[in-house]
Image (spheres, rainbow, N blue to C red):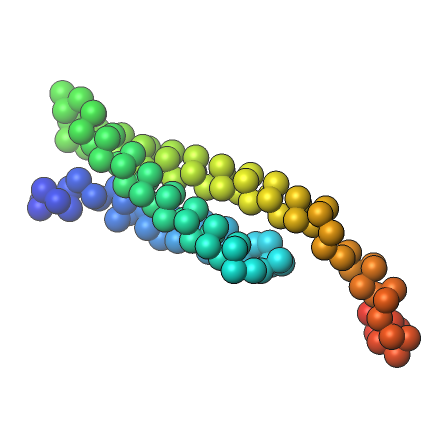
Length: 126
């Protein structure tokens, strides 16, 4: 096997799963969608990918080859997955606190927007 492919095999095999998690992180919650959130989400995903690559490299080089060549791949995969999930968990928590703070700081609630709407549109909002 090509040595470079062997080192990055864990990341290559986890790209589909990382992609699913990244899409779910990007899409939910759907609102509010603002430029600052797009930047935050982009930086979070880039950081998670970089940490996964770092964890994979560290795991591959720290694994004891005495247990066999496959053990290096197992440790590399665990390192990549653990670092990706750690970064995404931190990002979800930070984003949740940030969006809640924005909402509490004065964004109008749906009830307030409905009450201030003209009477002709209020009946459709209910």
